[in-house]
Image (cartoon, rainbow over all chains, first blue to last red; front, top):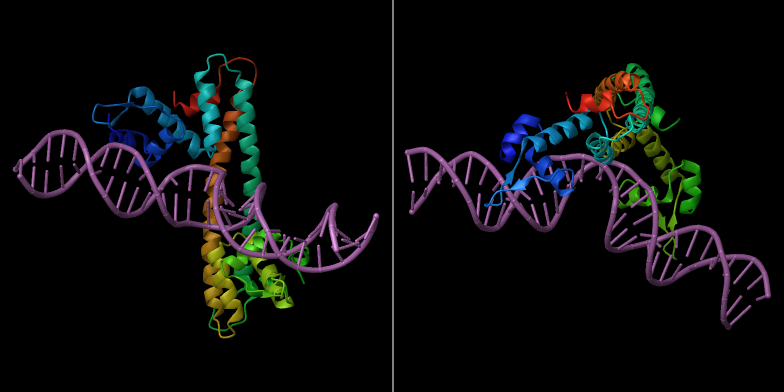
Length: 128
Length: 128
DNA sequence: CTTGACCTTCCAGTAACTGGAAGCCCTATC
DNA sequence: GATAGGGCTTCCAGTTACTGGAAGGTCAAG
């Protein structure tokens, strides 16, 4: 399989797939013409990476998860810890965003949004 | 005032303040020795920027907001539109993160987290 | 043989800083 | 006057995870 086929199957752009090879997440074989040749194992790995990325894991986390996935002697505790740390990170981000959301919602509601200059949003930013 | 004083007052690191000058958000005066000299207006601007940033506005949005703030003939509608767009962006991000959160919570709950290799998290990532 | 769709590599840019190096400035102390 | 410290300056590189684009090789069809 060539890169565009794998791209279609995994949903990852060719650029991303090349990038993942660059940083050593995959090692596809090469044809005599220099084209990458993807085996099912490569596609499988890429799908794994894609899924981990949609769950928000960092590339370095993905690297670790892949290593754990391929390690038959892994402890599920290691996977769980990673996931829990990531989850905590997400919880924190959500809390931050919700705080912004609350403030912005309030300010937007207060703002007339007309052709006059008076604006509670700017007043808030300026802390007057 | 020197940069470290302004840093203390605004909570912005000196590096960030220099960066904001670099990209043209502020234009502090200079002393004969080359040191930046901050007037109250600069400090005020930096506080404005800091607050806008904590609300998650991008630097370019901040630039626009500053311009609107300084434009006495602005329409509050322009400010409101910017804030609404930003709010929509935040809503979207929160939704994405909550989706990740739900999946991860579920997976973490399912995972024994012991010294055995069997792991629902990895199974999910591998789509088995 | 040419055209068009592939594929390759390499370089640069994105967002918003942050760390670090090299070096000047100022004040206090010995 | 020399020196030590802390603060200031600029400039360069690195961060994250790609993405766009240029220059050029490859392949199948007509």
